[in-house]
Length: 505
Image 1 (tube, rainbow, N blue to C red):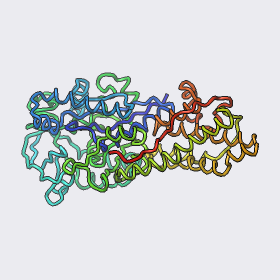
Image 2 (cartoon, rainbow, N blue to C red; image 1 turned 90 degrees about the vertical axis):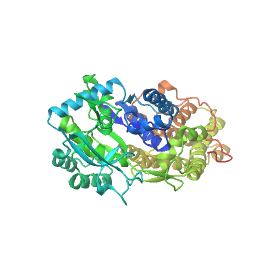
Image 3 (tube, one colour; image 1 turned 180 degrees about the horizontal axis):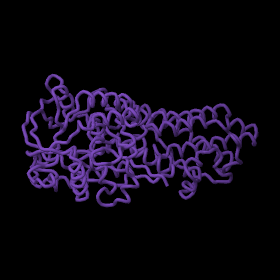
Image 4 (spheres, rainbow, N blue to C red; image 1 turned 60 degrees about the vertical axis):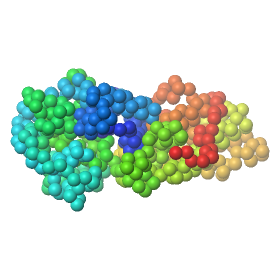
């Protein structure tokens, strides 16, 4: 069995998860579900970055003396959020756990033995918000472009990683593996950074009192990014379970936000090269989104809590909207008005109404029983587009393909007019029409499983397809026309997307 290993970034836990965190995580969950359905052994890793100065400052601001207790509580808040959002991760890694300490120590020693760690003095700029050393070239009007604050000037004796040693090797690898950094706009940005701006990086802090100690030097703490990136190895057994590690590494994809691509696309691959480990197959950096046209920020009070959205609309609507509205990899806008429009239009009127009408007509005209099979080859190009789009992380195009089927099926209802066929007693034509529509619903349900699992399950249930039947065949076989068996009894269900009188937010 082929394996598929994917990760989200590990998130700082100095606050609750926002819709931005949910965006990355939902995209990863769609990939995980799709590849599981495709018969692969999937390992989906996520977790929390707990050695960050931001977390310590958040604990101090709340007057919490025991930082670890605060981190334990916040980790539970994040775990419960992902549980509420139906995220199907296989491992939740925490960078304060013993497994991670052991992995970081092993990795540090491997890089040290390669001769790639040396001691020196760091004198320069440090942005607390980014938890990164930055250069004058990174600044805009003397401020960090991400946090709009002036960086600190610090002078410290630290350990350094010979990042520049890997400049040529990284450039050669990126040139020969164009799919390594996606989308291509990010790839060009990283090439420019590596060629013009990349320097050796300080990988320890003498002033930090929290974090993983440098092996052999308790006075220094490992720089949070050098520590955090190693979580991708910790989660699959690096230093503890070599069999599992060999099964899943290298990662198939790291999903990240565009603000952390330098760490993932320059520092991380150089670290792996130094440690003698293969590089991930893909690093995909998605864009940011605004909220109703405004940048999301605590000061503006427009940070969207995904739990609140889910309590109002349900998980599937949130998943659908985020992946349909914003092209993955580009910037976009989260709009409550647009979400309402898509709910009422595409979900309620198009998909929900189709399912209701087809099941109701089958009940009325065929006693709720699936008629004899009919051959109908109309959707193969859309199914092909669906697969090819997911393979390259184009979730919006995959949903476009699904909705082409939804719209063709709705058009078919209007063309065939089953109510007229019934009235005119054209029973054979009526039965053929309803089989085509019912089988279209079955295909739609399977195509929707990665994106809208609860909705897909409800459609399959209404079609009389039991949970054991659902997974009795490989996913690709299930997407072949004609799998709905004649004689199957439908189970009429509730409306998939009930009318909403007014927007709740």
